Length: 136
Image (cartoon, rainbow, N blue to C red):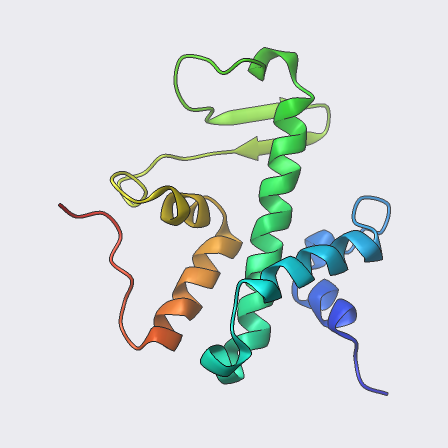
């Protein structure tokens, strides 16, 4: 029997395999959101890897947002970017690097997770040329 897209996603990204944290419906929702932002025709044989990387990025960003929203110390912003958040057992680290400085909001957001970085790498392969981050 063929492996479902949900099974493939959870195998590729086992950190999202915990059903208590990531219900099947929630994961499938993120996968559908990612697929809506991409063209299967354009992405061709990299389509599945691309939408899975983008879905994982969206999930990671969503989880980071939940942690930040549940931490009163982060409410209302602050003096600069959050670089580290820890609540209970969960830890999330953000980094502002030269790679993300001077980029568009979308590019910086994608570079904020390893999944987004993978999506950008795949997008470069699909486009046939590197995506230039930063610049004048």
